[in-house]
Length: 317
Image (cartoon, rainbow, N blue to C red; front, side, top):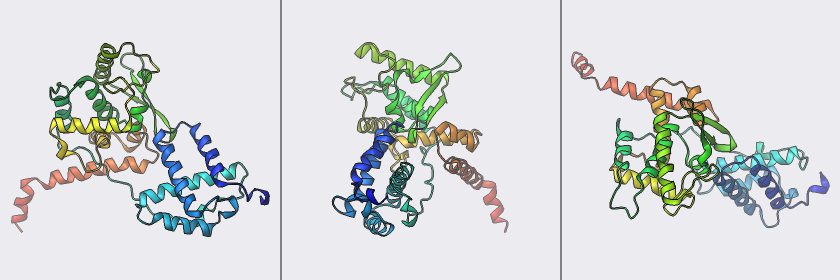
């Protein structure tokens, strides 16, 4: 390994990212990985080589990196560097992975954040289904399709953006959507006739606006016919919440993810187990899926606690 100690680390990072790109992660995931690797690398100095990477220097760099950042951000950067060293070990560039000697924060599984209110999803869809004349170019068919794919198929923002017109396939009664999931993990989500019809109406309205839609075309487009981008999709969902008057029922920081969480929570309420939720949502860990079951149990207990008879019993003490 001695002759490799002078190898520039930045070049190795580019090789690692190129190899990772072959697994087809989302653009956002790849950019975040690059950003984390380079941010820590800059803290190690200029023109860093393999010989500069030791448990001691990495601990110092991560200590500086952690200042002012959330535990989740530090954990993500640690994971990126751990994967990078794993790549180098497999390729025989380094003998071992020093990241086991670098501390990382403990990350608790975030609690689900579904929309508040029993009938909020229905109110949202009903309101958005009608053209809002205050908009410059209303397109309710497109907006309802976006909401429905998140509420009834549990798709993430990046998964929605990656959909193609041909991602929905199958015979009647066996329709499904093929999803390019987080971390490059593909999955298939069954879709019911109602959701299929909503997407079909949107595609028909798009054909009227812009002409033929080919299977390889991005499914979701903006009002100019260009593929929807991350910011545009986020703004679309926020706009739908405002138009429906339900912005106060969206957990802080959730936005589109609140729709996905609503899908999962309703699955749990209707009897789906953690394993089924894990497969449908593309979770890497069963623990994440179990959280929806626990939230449902807490909601059930709160409902029982609200029973007026319980309060009457309390007065008997």
